[in-house]
Amino acid sequence: MSITGLHDLFVYKLRQQYYVEQELVDALDEMSRNTGNDRLSQGFADHRDETRTQVQRLEDVFDALDVRPETEDAPVLDALEEERRTLERQIDDEDLLDMVYLNAGMMTERFEMTTYEGLSMLATELELSDDAQAPLESNYDEEKSAYRELNTLSTASEMKSLWDRLTPS
View (cartoon, helix red, strand yellow):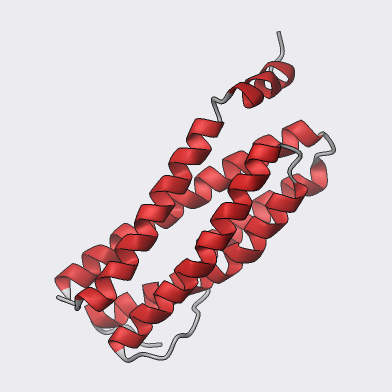
């Protein structure tokens, strides 16, 4: 794809986010199954379901633009996922692995929030219709909410005992 203007850049970034959301459905499902913490597992499962809806919303944006939904590789997500997989192979302690998942989730949500902010900025500059902008805002709001939930979980009482166990005295 040749990028020659803001519209092309928007479509390119939209395709990257489409890739990201599709990949995260599987990653969230995997982390939900692998974590030993029930609250973290449920949070990942809930966000997996939200992410499926986010994929559909991105398809709505493509429709509003009359552009075929396609994916574009997102090296940032691929790097985050490779780091998570590398740590999974090196860690046997379930509690420590839960900390990896919590951090991976928070890093991914930050990345997604930034991406949606950029897409919204471009959509505003391009004066795209509400049919294109509203789904992006909805996805952004859910990413912010997911980040807040993970951040809250990092200080929750059941995680406090894990921190205490994992932190040297």
